[in-house]
Length: 356
Image (cartoon, rainbow, N blue to C red; front, side):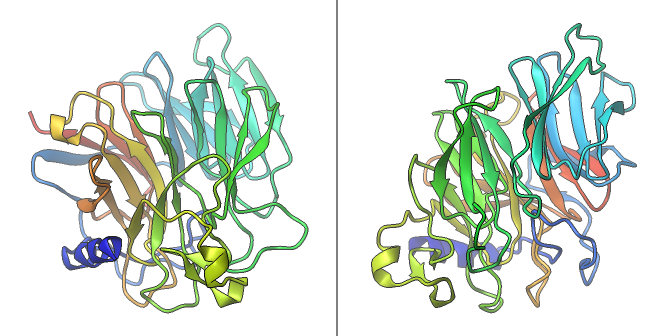
């Protein structure tokens, strides 16, 4: 009930939530029914585009040298070094959605597989391109890849269906594996669209999740889940705070064994990325907070999405932070401590910085 009250508060505070396509299926066949407002940010911060003219940017990552990598859904990865404009780093990918720097290499999550890109001599050009995993379902777009302090990689894999499991395929889970693809296992289940994954300062894993469609404008809520090994987060049998879904075969007994969300978001917000702030440029009160991108959904009759919200590290409450995006997707904190956002529909990277 406490989470639901917070969800109502979010709507009343006016997040400028708007409609677009389902996260993990970035089709522009269902554009917003009215244009979003101009970029706006919480007092004490600035917000501005820093890179424009991109082709549907999705994932973002920095390497230890501070170079920025940008995935474009058309199939390429760009690199930006210093003040130079972005240039092509690698190409030929199938709808790349997520980038992650791990063990001296750039990992690219694309539809169906994950590739590792090595730049052995550090000259900003790919020397070796290796397929790490190739068994991801072709019709399901996996998303964010993250790593922990013990050298494990974690990947969210979404579902092909809306509220029923698809026979014969593994879907709606988080996979864990080593940097070479070995020791792969199912780490957690019951997640319809776990697009955003991130570790907080305590090395606790979180994942965003999108609720099913077909239950009206206000149900079910989108979610942020605190991920534990072996836990089941409900889909398709349950949604929200252990609410049974008859369409998915759920009942009270089954839902009682599932894990509840850490935080709820308005239904059909289209929650995508999440990142925890561990930089030094934002005020100290923001340290450890989560920043979450809401890309929006085509399903709702009212406009929802186009915003970034903040999850308080102390009580996991959700508050507005930035709005006016076309479709925010990838998030990353720069080495200097700014928050960068990939705006998919507008083809640009937006920087959020604390005012001096």
